[in-house]
Amino acid sequence: MVHDGTRCYGAIVRDLISGELSAMIAKATTIATGGYGRIYKVSTNGIICEGTGMAIALETGVAELGNMEAVQFHPTAIVPAGILTTEGCRGDGGLLRDVDGHRFMPDYEPEKKELASRDVVSRRMTEHMRKGKGVKSPYGDHLWLDITVLGRDHIEKNLREVKDICNHFLGIDPAEEWIPVRPTQHYSMGGIRTRHTGESTTLKGLFACGEAACWDLHGFNRLGGNSVAETVVAGMIVAEFIADYCHSAESDIDISTRLIGEFHQREQAGIDALLKSSGPERVTELRRRMEEIMIDKVGIFRTGEELDEAVDELGQLLKRSRNIGLKTRDRGANPELVAAYRLPKMLKIALCVAVGARERRESRGAHFREDFPERNDRDWLKRTLATWKSPDDPSPTLDYEELDVAVMELPPGFRGYGTRNEIGHPETDKRQQQVDRERERLKDADRYQIQSALMPFEHLLPECYRGNNERLEDSIDE
Image (cartoon, rainbow, N blue to C red; front, side, top):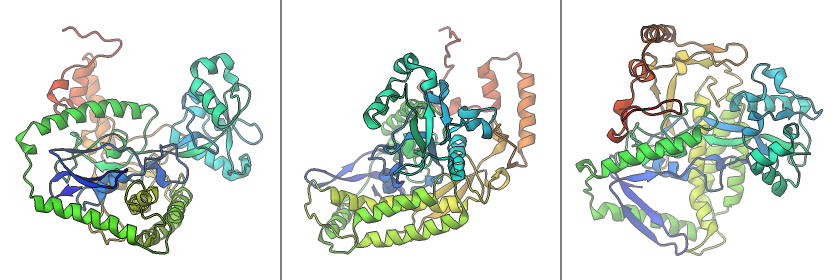
């Protein structure tokens, strides 16, 4: 990332075929590189989702990453490939069964059963396997997803993609056989902290959207389907803000060629050093260990002791990654060089996750601490902000951003699963009473008036998107 400490001017990019470095200078730089699931041993993410886009921003020493410890696990990825089977399987009536064929979710969640949120189902599945109710396999314990109860016609019409996945990757027909599944890393709620415009809160001219951003659509736990909503909505709104920014005087570029040259030379020197290195460390071994640490110690269930161990081990891996030796010295198309270049960045992202999880002494959404099982709104209703101040720092610097309950349309409350297990925020009841009074006062008003009274947002939209929106049951007269 080319920047002067306050303003981003573009990036130094590498041609994967020739290895040539070029400086791309721009009014606005946008990171839309997806999540960081591949820092885990098993993930439903594409193999390119290594978190390197966020890491490039992190390494500026200026840009902040938000809520990196918020990592979601999806309950039903197939074993061993880790490919996702849609939530529609359970939504349509599919069942989760254990080694004995017993449907166990009603034992834990008698009301929601298989339809509880992803974090709850993932934890219940893991808890059940811990009790010895998992199915043994060469790839570790798993459970069964039973959609045979839906019938062949339904599966072939509505769940055809699931049928094809099972056929191609498991060699089974899910209309006749149960599907081996277990919880697997799926989504990253954390990312580059941005304003509502998609622009970094601390580095002007840098934008981020989608899973690479902490735009705060999801909080600490994304609901099923909201990734599509984020893609459509963020893509539309953030793109409009970027276009407006590029057409404004605010985006004018004033940068010296010397600064550009310094960044180019620094990146070239780093790659040259990697190509010349004869260090004893191997990138594949370091990466494999990082993935194991993350899935074993920074996974679905977290404890202070294991998080301490994870931070220590990841820190050691980061040190060792500075002494990687390459077997292939080609400057051009060289996967080993690419992997060695990216690994320290992935380790920094992993440390942001692990340190953030260790310091957040509560459970919230997808972040579950066995030693702090309560959601603590009194002390922890705040975003985690991570920065990497200096290249030589062993770990990220954390700060926190308080949330204001007094402006929330839905102040934090009981989630509706099992027994209440939270420490309430002192302002929650007061704000809920205010909301209730407003709703009563506006009981004959339309939804636009109610929204404007409780939590106005229209002023935060690009001008072209302001005004009433239309739902299926609505008809807006022009």
